Image 1 (tube, one colour):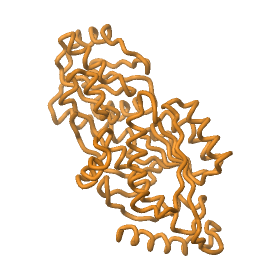
Image 2 (cartoon, one colour; image 1 turned 180 degrees about the horizontal axis):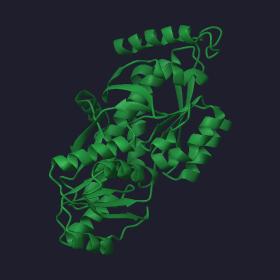
Image 3 (tube, helix red, strand yellow; image 1 turned 90 degrees about the horizontal axis):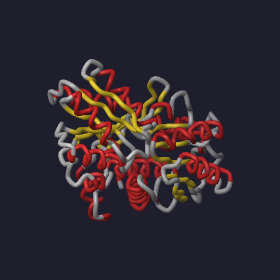
Length: 351
């Protein structure tokens, strides 16, 4: 609890700093509640991502919220049209103060709406377009370009001389690939994008086998990783597989019948103490990085709820909140190249 108290003291100082900007109420309101709309895929193929984020967020509120944060969860099933519908309902009917969203493509669908309505949006997204040139939108992770560069450097460290790149259609997938290719442009011998719902990869795998790459990088939508890996092994393709952050769901390993075992990817660091606490509470570590990120988001919003800063002042408050240490290690909130983001360290992990 001492960490939260120190954070509240910093927040109080910020209230004074903002008092001349019109972003605080005239008097602190001890009965104030922060109303948060949380849009996530809680059912469907991407449910593990939404569920882990919800779990981490709720865990933080139970520990730090003090009953001052009210949350309304909406299931968008990882469908941008449903994300937009949920956003409009939360803003126009529920009158929320702030929105949390999951994944790049759904977040891209509502980011311009949030900016126009001046509703702060914290998007668990890697695509920098979600937040670029926007004052009311921040992405709660490193950009996909940073992730792609980290993946590429690890591939070089492992001695991969030639790479096949396979992605499915999506904002995040495209952005990660761009970051990867900037580091290893001459190593790519195969590059193809598949439809987001594709489940038959045998023809494409035949083309990859003809190129005989050192390794195959895959960055798909949820549910596709395991199918691709299983079909690759059935065709006798044994090149090492590596991927992107979206690979981290353990259900992909089950779908692959073990073919994804040992595949590596890059994801935010997760504190071991948090991991133990989460496993004890929820009994699994599926998409544990998402849970850790949203545990920190929950802590931030709990601290914000204890201030008198109005929602229009949330972003200035956030950028003045300093360094944070917790479930994802040490991180700060930054703005670079017109993108607001959480500067969270990433690490190489294996399924």
